[in-house]
Length: 270
Image (cartoon, rainbow, N blue to C red; front, side):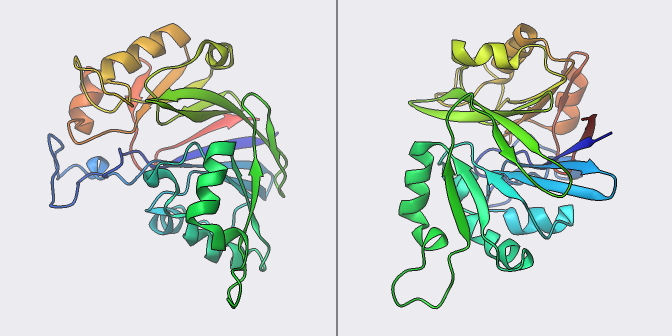
């Protein structure tokens, strides 16, 4: 039987924890689980000794994240949205390209994000005139609620993009084998809710405590309300900003809900 292995490579907000200046906020610097890189997740599907690997988001911390995960190659990358903390590590896929035998890495994004990627990182997708550096990525545009099937040695990983509200602009989460990954949102449109109800695992944004709402992210209280509404078997809070101390948060959460930490790994049967 196939096994899906999900690893949270980073679970911070855009500035990381600590922020530059050694700003830990309320987080205890002596707790290793409070040191957080920018949000990203690795998905692996295993069949025996074979494995298919998919990365969700190319954070500015990507090189260190893949080194920690001991991952040299990927079969594809999925992008949730175009904010810098989710795409500005994309050039680090150059070394994945070479590790794949100079075979381009497929990158899947929605139409808006694809345009941003081509504007900011056009050289990754097409060799500029006069350049001796090869293009390293192939860009594919996905549509919400249409599964993306990614082939690899460990079998096909099917990822369903679901639309999320992220301030004035949409973001996307992904549902993969009963796990929902929703890193950046401040609301969920009605069309996405049926795809997110009753999941085995829900990984969801919980930036900081309320009661004051945030314009682009869920507060802790809002996140818990969504968890109560969607009723997953297990929930994990991500996008944790400096007010969110790991031990304090863990001690106050309801049963079945836990804070993320970098390197957190869970498995689900395929």
